[in-house]
Image (cartoon, rainbow, N blue to C red; front, side, top):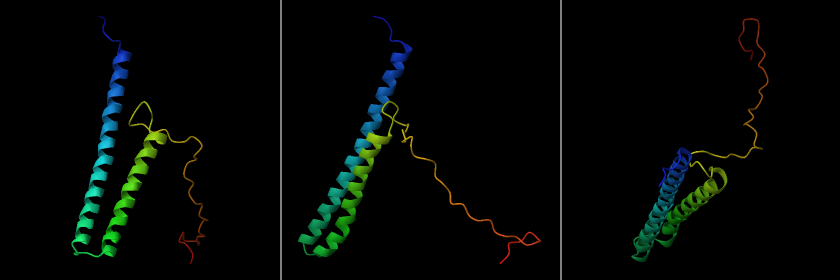
Length: 118
């Protein structure tokens, strides 16, 4: 059996790196889901035991759900649209997005001593 070439070895390393990093990202999302569900369960138990009101439980539950949904959408969109499909740590930003344009401020008039006039 022949030894794999350097290009093949490099590509295998890239695929392994992608797989490992993808598993880490998945673990992050699933950990976030676990935390969100645990929090919602705790709030439900406190509400059912009469320790907190339904309104109080909802006040705390809504941000937890919103944060989890934001994490889920953010990770999905980042992986599907921005992350390079070959190199995990590279980004493919859209080419048609121009650089951030800074506002042009008018020059301040200066008096004879070089101090800004008021």
